[in-house]
Length: 196
Image (cartoon, rainbow, N blue to C red; front, side):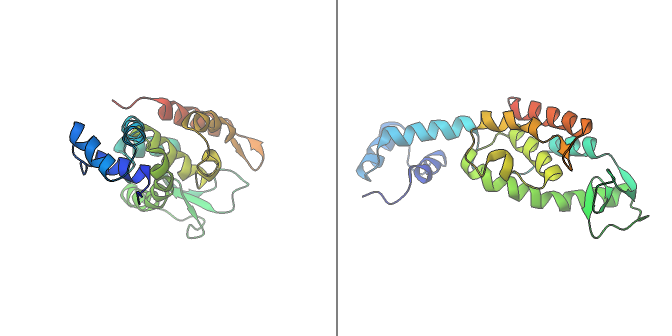
């Protein structure tokens, strides 16, 4: 009886652990796996993109910086915000009124902040195998919203359904915000853009 899931075996095939061609077919069948099922999953993963952990690209970082803008002095983007924002969208209890930051400090803070959001998207990348553009779009979304649990419906939506849901996140405090709508349009366009 095969011990590993089709997904695990497909990933091993993509990492060249089962050989190629007829040799791979014989080896998989000898180990008790359905070659056709494995090969179909290999094809899906290959066309979807890698399921290994990804990182945001420089294009993704530039996109986030363009949305957030550089804020040298701590401010509140909306009066309803609980905390102040500084740099490129750094938000939290550690930011105090009238606090200042340099651009270099802001970039370092952004890189540090992004690590947590990259991890949140990678949690789902293991299921979806996001392309780089999809990944960048979702990290940008996650950086703004806080997670991608809702937009992916905890990993139960298809990629097409995820794309359709971007525009539902154009509200803050229950009110429509044009700036958020514009951001969601750009994130969705990047999500739908084929990688080169």
